[in-house]
Length: 123
Image 1: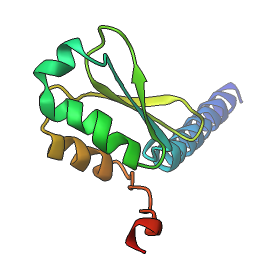
Image 2: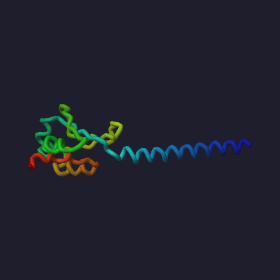
Image 3: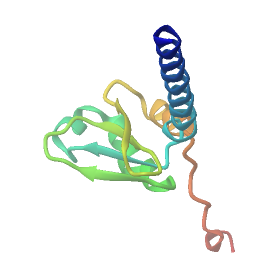
Image 4: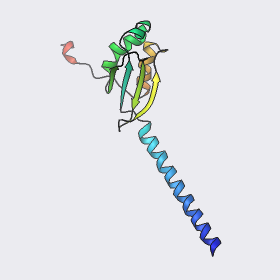
């Protein structure tokens, strides 16, 4: 009887472990791979003056995207910080070695889109 009880306990633990693992995988796939917002963190001058493509990306392109903002941090290297729907940091990527085009492609590849253009200018 003792042997049967220990087998039951081991089986129960295995089923519980598998259930928790599968529920964790579905949460990771549904939330952590979805980026709800992003912040580009960087200094606004010093090191950016040596990175003209990244500087143009930050000051000219970032404001055109939905849910993407710039945060000035003195002395910081340029980084893209990605957040999930719970405002938890999910990923952090260095932008220093990217071109302006690559920075934009990175945002698009992470699911971010540009804000609709204002039609008042066309009239």
